[in-house]
Image 1 (cartoon, rainbow, N blue to C red):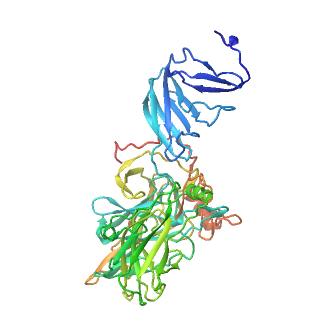
Image 2 (image 1 turned 60 degrees about the vertical axis):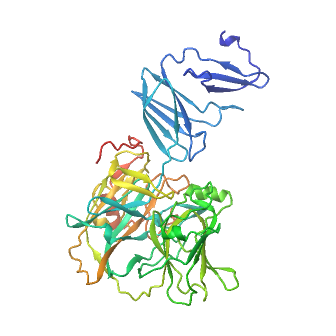
Image 3 (image 1 turned 90 degrees about the vertical axis):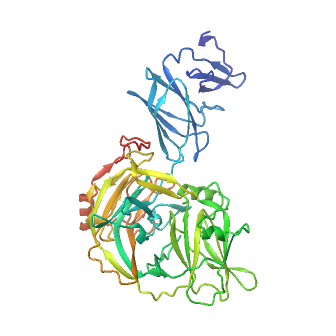
Amino acid sequence: MGLDKIVLKDPRSIITGDYDGDGATDLLITQNHGPAVLLRNEGGNKNHWLRLVLKGLNDNRSAIGTKVEVFAGTNRQKFEIAGSSGYLGQNSTFINVGLGQAKEADVVRMLWPTGVVQDEIEVAGMREQAYNEIDRRGSSCATLFVWDGQRYELVSDMLGAGVVGHWVGPGQRNIPRPTEYVKIDRSTIREKNGKLSFRLMEPMEEVVYLDQVRLFAVDHPSDYEVYPNEYFASNPPYPPFKVVASRNPRPPAGAWDDHGHDVLADLQAQRYVGDFELLPFKGFTKLHSLELDLGEPYRGGPLRLLLHGEIEYFTATGMYAADQAGIQAIAPYVEALDAKGKWIRVIDDMGFPAGLPRTMIADLSGRLPQGTQRIRISTNLQIYWDSILIDRTDQMVNARLTPVPLENADLMFHGYPRQIEAQPPGNVKYKYEEVSRTGPYARQSGTYTGYGDVHSLLTDFDDRLVVFGSGEEVALEFDPHSLPAVPKNWTRDYFFLANGYEKDMDFYTAEGATVEPLPFRNMGTYPYPGKSFPLDDKHLDYLLNFNTRQMSGNEPQGYWYDYSQRK
């Protein structure tokens, strides 16, 4: 029967889909005053074909909004899974692809609504292929590695507090803190060819604006441990730099979560405490607490918490979605139990560890009521503690800081080191030497710093930024030969300082798809209407002579991991 023989009664929509599963796209016509009419495609599958069935993970489960490209030989086809196809109609969310004479698709590339790019290669035709959205982290702070005598070992991530353009509320952006110190423990660092060697890289898809790096040798009595005074503060004032010395810190006398579970043994064994309910907004939980017994009543004097832990970072999208649900981020706050059994808030923002596992300092000295023995830390952020120590060390210890000269700094491409998802969630580890030259990451468009020598850009905190992106790194070599000898009964650790910023590609990040505008020290929030990046002779010379690598963000590349060949 030809189409001219079909009588339709007020047709409303045409819906496409492979209704009989033969690889050819059929048509279903709906009518307002009659039954649906199915038009089967006879012969549409005479060439090779492929059916794609996609399922979202961090996106909607039906994958609506996902853009798909299929490459087969010289043919390139583009699709998008739509939410509707007319009045009261929706096409099948399955994608039917014609392959012609090709027996397989060379590449199936999916761009999920949250910006995740995923490649599947050598996809066989003449069948249905189902793919789940990869559980991929889109953003990661710049990641620091140190030479330990055998390999480059992960230290931690850095510049998390230097993120720019982050959505924090309607009409509000965060105020970045570009400065961060990280401790390099003496057990993890060794000379390589007479130098102390580091790699600071971007393993995912943020753009990094690195302004300055410095390394300090920190000499101190061997019966003390030292830490930089570091934590992620949600708002100014930010923690001032100082060396915190600790001697014989003690675990709390007791520790309980808000379910009443005794978690002291977990903290002593460095098992992460995390019995809290996650919310559907990344990085958010229901409000939860950790109660600590200090062991004795506070009578004044020094009192610090040495908290080791990590955070599963909230995203701009997560904060926006939480705000839509009436939920605001609650930074960890501290309460003290008074003599009447009432909890009194004493610190509004204790801070939290700025990314991957590290030790942060919470100074309670002079901030607790006299006689306090129990405190409580509460938050609705996804923070995991695995060790808490109580320190009462007098800070009269003389630690000696000596800068280690930066000898070489070179910007280059490294690739994507193998990621190992550890526990708890968010604790990502990397194997630096196991590297793929491709990965499922996009790149901001704009002007980056040219590869090669960037030493002169990193010696001062002066808004002359080394701008680099996905899969790139700065190789850093420090010369320790001028360091003084370590005194008897002393030992030496190191503090690594980075000044800089970073920007992710989250949908709700300001200017997240581009490198520009460049951040600078006196900008306040980002972007910075009414202000301008410095354009004096010094900075114009920097822009013209160093930032010479133009990237469109659409350069041909693979979006899959391939560890079959090492660098």
